[in-house]
Image 1 (tube, rainbow, N blue to C red):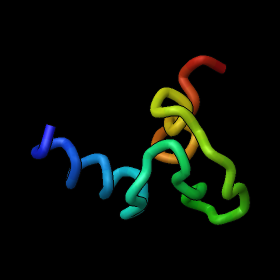
Image 2 (image 1 turned 30 degrees about the vertical axis):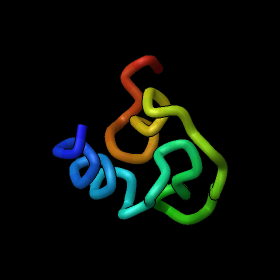
Image 3 (image 1 turned 30 degrees about the horizontal axis):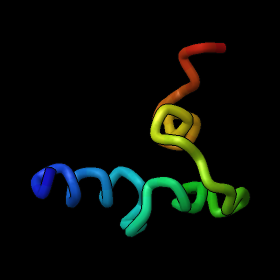
Image 4 (image 1 turned 90 degrees about the vertical axis):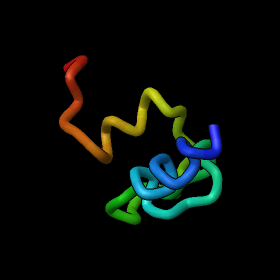
Length: 47
């Protein structure tokens, strides 16, 4: 899992904790689950 840490940190905007990562836009500093981060990183596929 050590190899995943840097990758996740980059995707999450260099945030140390995926659960408390701020929104990429900085408008919603709300905790999101790893599945919901798609709203920031990629277009929402479920909609």
